[in-house]
Length: 80
Image: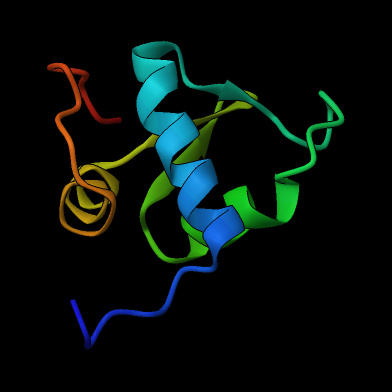
């Protein structure tokens, strides 16, 4: 964990929202006027999220980072 890039609180929150969104993902933050657009872009650049077909979804790496840094179970949600 200590050798991974630091995630700001806002980015950890965006990662958690991706987990909560599940397989449906989150809409493109720029198009939906979401305030976490920068965080979602950062998560994509870190490989923790993927941007496909106009939405953001969590990746396997994102699920693992959520598990280790934020904790809790993902209720069986599948990664992109």
